[in-house]
Amino acid sequence: MTYVYVNVSLPTREGTAMAFELSAEHETFRKVVREFADTEIAPHSARWDRDHHLPVDVVRQLGELGVFGLTTPEEYGGSGGDFTSLCVAIEEIGRVDQSLGITVEAAVGLGINPILSYGTEDQKQRWLPDLAAGRALAGFGLTEPASGSDAGATATRAVLDGGEWVIDGTKQFITNSGTEITSCVTVTARTATAEDGLAEVSAIIVPSGTPGFTVEPAYDKLGWHASDTHPLTFTGCRVPEDHLLGERGKGFAQFLATLDDGRIAIAALALGCVRAMLEQSVAYAGERTAFGVPIGSKQGVAFQIADLKVMADAARLLVYQAAALRDAGRPHVEVKQAASVAKLYATEAAVTATRIATQVHGGYGFMEEYPVARFYRDAKILEIGEGTSEIQRLLIARSLGLPVE
Ligand SMILES: Cc1cc2nc3c(=O)[nH]c(=O)nc-3n(C[C@H](O)[C@H](O)[C@H](O)COP(=O)(O)OP(=O)(O)OC[C@H]3O[C@@H](n4cnc5c(N)ncnc54)[C@H](O)[C@@H]3O)c2cc1C
Image (cartoon, rainbow, N blue to C red; front, top):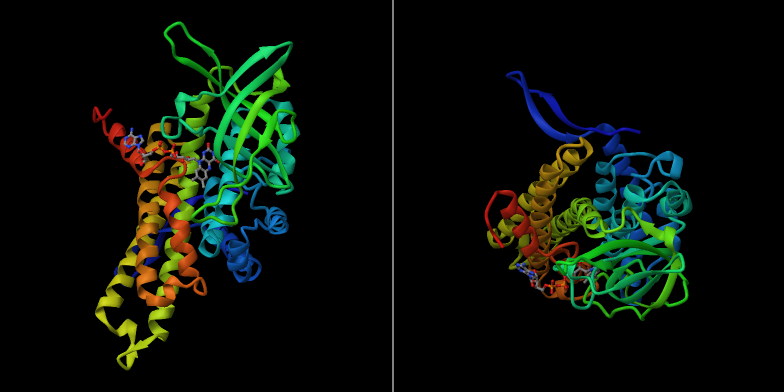
């Protein structure tokens, strides 16, 4: 299936006008995911969040719906679709449940994507069919206790010994790394130090259950309660030499490229959040009365909701423009800049939108009985994960040619 982002000519009284819309196939697919999200996810999200429970059965059902295999070619068990369709799926899932939205985003963007982009034929055949079907999840371990934004400062080491990589180190905040269906985690590690002192960083696939690879207890997080996040430790962890992913010494560069796609996808997750806040605020402002009238008849409330509509529309255009550039195979610098612009705007809009929606809901907005409370807790991480807002501003400034350090 091939999807395109289309400029649609709309008939008007005077002639025609251009509008920016997704293709009919994308919109049909959106309806399928939305229906699943509304019936199979939304009614249970509050409970999963309260219980800190990732519903693996729902992950499998999303796999059967084709969500995890959207960007994987058919020969590896996917449907060979485009990146835009992945964004549509993440937006719709994120509109009802940010934890499941990030589970899908990380599974494809961080789990499947690096193996698809840099894996050998054997690695693709081994890992992708289960990942694309949602029968398995994979994580990517870049962040460490002392290196997040400065991801090149990886301290984890891997040395070759008797045809095996021996890995020692610690990874931090790794999504999808400890679920009952996690099949592997790809980690970055120093595999040598050059004479100038610079680290040679490579990526290595570590199968779950490998001796010396420990998934530490899950974090107690502010939000994304139903998403799986763990610290990982590697102590003399041995994997065969052919578990190297891509070229030796290119691990950091590979990961940076992986993050460009991830940023578009996480911006789609933020867009889902903004839309949820808009829809819930419109509904509440029409029902709730104060001083004998619906609160939506007060300009102080209505104007805040008008701002949510502006945020949703702007975020949508930026997300799908970035996805369209990526699908069209436009130059990397162009896609990279568009990804950072979309990520920065959509995630900051999501944080603002949850604050506004909570305010519109008054005291009820602070109660877990209303989903806005959960979205309020979930939104903050959007400005941090896969590159903070500051890092996005840094990348955008550099792309403009500014000599920012
Ligand atoms: C729930 C969750 C899930 C995650 N999942 C994964 C995962 O699956 N895999 C993975 O590898 N990582 C993951 N991460 C890690 C995430 O990508 C990092 O937390 C993020 O990149 C920031 O790194 P840090 O936490 O070390 O913050 P730091 O890098 O220490 O940043 C602290 C502050 O300093 C600012 N700062 C740093 N450098 C600069 C600079 N040059 N200019 C201006 N400001 C700067 C930052 O913007 C931030 O405000 C996850 C994190 C969380 C919380």
